[in-house]
Amino acid sequence: MRFLFAILLSMSLVSAFGSDTLSYTQVKIWPDGNYPQVNGHESEPTQPKWVGDPFMDIYLADPSNNNHRMVVCLPGGGYSHLARAHEGNDWAPFFVGLGYNFVVLNYRMPYGNHLIPQSDVYEAMRYLRAHADQLGIDPQAIGIMGHSAGGHLATTVATHAPKEARPNFQILLYPVVTMDESLTHRGSRENLIGKEPLPGLAYLFSNENQVDDLTPPAILLLADDDKAVPSPNSVNYYLALKQHGIPATMHIYPSGGHGFGSRESYIYHKSVIADLTSWLEQLKPVAQ
Image (tube, rainbow, N blue to C red; front, side, top):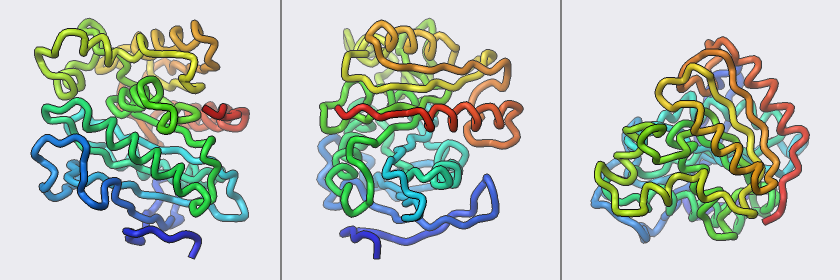
């Protein structure tokens, strides 16, 4: 066996990018149930779009093609559910094919506690770094990938997390970044911080305001006609990264709206794949 975990379950996935079947291992984030943040939903069973007990699906690259880097993917869903397929597991064949190890992180929803999602990601990042040798990865080459509200969570981890939990690079697809009422996705804002948030909370989770010198390099991919999450979310984050001298790349496609993810039906899917592949090839993760 390539590695051992205390809790694991071998499973398989039929690729949306092809007919190959990939195996993965499922690992609980809090195997003892000692959640540092709770909201009363922890005992509820996991459903297709609801996570009661957070877990990771871990796909390892073939040893002959392993570049020892890892991408941790956060599906979107407005902080109310998870779009696990086209914003999660369906990406695995693409990354594994490039030699990347790939993780889909099934995090809990806030439901009144805005610290829950990030607490799950922080612990997952710590776990992956602690088990880097068993996983065959470089602990300082772990990136985070987020879609929509998952993009907000990704930018939260990239700007708020303590050093040991910060990623080394960011891949952001049509991310919610700000909690500014004039630009944010209202559902994501209300589900995360509430309809009447505590003073200062909206500013704190407007992540364009939280970029610092430890924020990792990023690529942003979005459509110009996205009505759900307006493009200034990405543009303002890009500008904040540049103000801090953080390497950043942004691609705004002419159309396609919101939520295209890994879908091959997206008119600019081939461009997304080409642009992302090119960026990954030149990426040199910076040790935090």
